[in-house]
Image 1 (cartoon, rainbow, N blue to C red):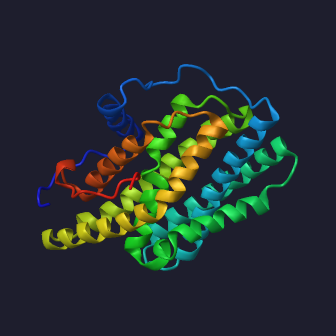
Image 2: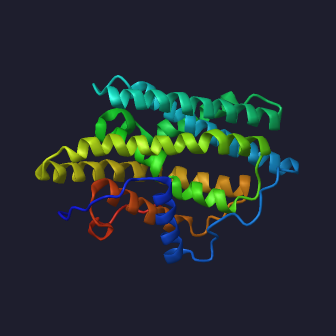
Image 3: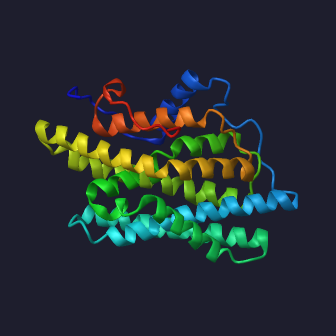
Length: 271
């Protein structure tokens, strides 16, 4: 893995370009834009499924807050600390909004259910996110960038949503999450681009090792969450495993500045 590329800037436009290319290769029947607007949950069963989906979303964000709060003073890097302070504030606000929407739909405060789901994230991930910088980068990759394939599938194929949640997502969550992804890219590139060729080879090995551990740990969660998303908002998940794996390879190739073809065989979400 010695070929060095000139990377374009990571942007939301680049994300769409890459993902649509993967759709053409692996799932050309899936839409590249939304064909119909989602409707609110109607039946008691739909409201129950949607509630559990929203609880999972709040738990995802609260887990990010807890990890970043533990890690923020571990690196003497003010640029990273400022980025993490924003990430904590944004994801805390996202989790709180989701909590309130789940409460409005169910009539009960979901905070205990949210914390139970947060604990499952800790159980799956162990100490990887807070072990060292490699583990923390793997955490950021998995919780901010590797999930983009799912987010794009959601945005194009979901059939059920809460109008207030959708409005908040469009106005706040989507722009915030784009900033988070760009922040992760910026932190890593500052570190990687300053390294010597020999150091870069070592960094590539270290990042792949941590990211592979993260994938192995997250596989059971991802399958559970995809099925929950299918029940809760009606997304298409049949091609999601192959799209997820292909998207993850694209992200890692970009981060490590090497061709996708030069990546080793990686753990699949289907393993």
